[in-house]
Length: 222
Ligand SMILES: C[S@@+](CC[C@H](N)C(=O)[O-])C[C@H]1O[C@@H](n2cnc3c(N)ncnc32)[C@H](O)[C@@H]1O
Image (cartoon, rainbow, N blue to C red):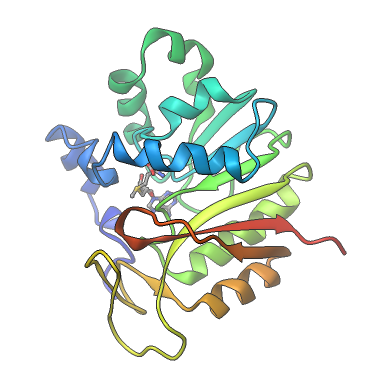
């Protein structure tokens, strides 16, 4: 495999940002995505008192709405330059007040450096659709000990039927793969790897852009 995702290609972010593509490279759909996702976050437990970690936040397509909705908003991404571009071009002054730039942390290894342990809720929207299952496992395994107050993470993946070998066409036409971008997994694999990382996961029935499926994962009680 050359790169797990297009994002990992050398120079990808530099070129995309130079070309003014910070909206496109997180998937476009800047109105539709928050319109669909924000109510789901509230429905599945995000409240105004939460300290939210937005993993793989990109150019803040969701973050620009989320930052003023919660007690504290922190974001990570493989590219801090991409998050800063969103901060500079997509946030109005009032939202910037709620989101100091120091809360945008570059982290491609799901190690969560510099994020305070006060985090209570996490989100990874359209991130593990772009990465192999091993990254979802790593992200969850590292989350648990770093954030003792974490109540829940919401994340999305593409699913394929159990036993599917080779590509799978999602409902809205995207073709996903077991061994390259865009990645899919079987539901049982998602449940097994979240359990191995110390979480109890549950798939949600909502229809999401491109056919991705949202899961809740809550720290399992010993
Ligand atoms: C489709 S975008 C979604 C961005 C954002 N969550 C949203 O919904 O607007 C995928 C994001 O994952 C980020 N990403 C890719 N690989 C990553 C990694 N290894 N660690 C952290 N972020 C990564 C990309 O930079 C990109 O911003």
